[in-house]
Length: 310
Image (cartoon, rainbow, N blue to C red; front, side, top):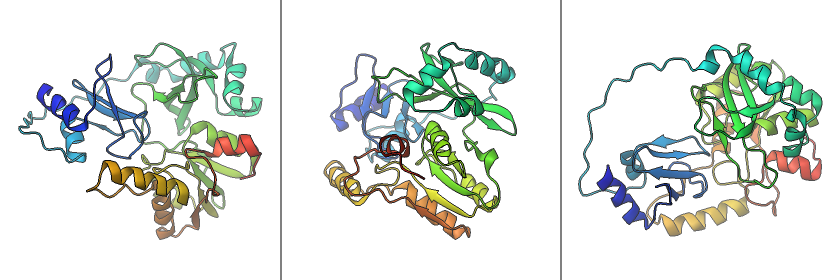
């Protein structure tokens, strides 16, 4: 692994930081170096698309062939024991919701109403089963009425590029707010949990769901189709991985060709989701970001800036 790590660093012309992390554009979704890093011991992870891979997998995605690659035999993995928070999720949720700065912290992040904060049981506290000990905004995800995932984000106002982290053991198979899907609903697919809540606050008649863009699962497409919605709007971020407008896509392709002249850029996920829904018999379309929209703009920022209706 040490030799493979050194080979990757040399081929990518990248240097590890003080913690041994190397930050590059994600080899899976193409997000910039602020979202993906790898190290010698654990491989790499992308905070945008949730891709995790070994050094060998990273080298294959980047088409980097080390002089010598040793593949250790795979070991049978034992099922992980439930985390403490999974055994007592309501205890943790009650504690997060009892935080004295719950409302002020959330409203400093996004203009959420007291009703929205209470309805989705948004809280504040330390993310359990995590190496990070700072207090975060906490968003729970439910499946059949039971909390199956906890996501947290640092809420310092000056931190505009904070990442959403997940509590250890959190399910990645559940679509956020899927329990609200009903026949005849207008469904909006977004990338951020809180933006889904904000969209429904602005337009209560819709059902907004969140599963991420590049990490979207085909099972969620079928789940939405099975709910028999009236129509679906796929409103992902204005970036290459989500639903870019023509300006953003051209800029991304130009930068991609310079870095990867022998590879085609990955296709945006938004149009793929919409096409899959159309194939399933659902009336679906992608939101068209207007020309001049800043890159990486999301539905939450658009609603906050312009007060636009969904």
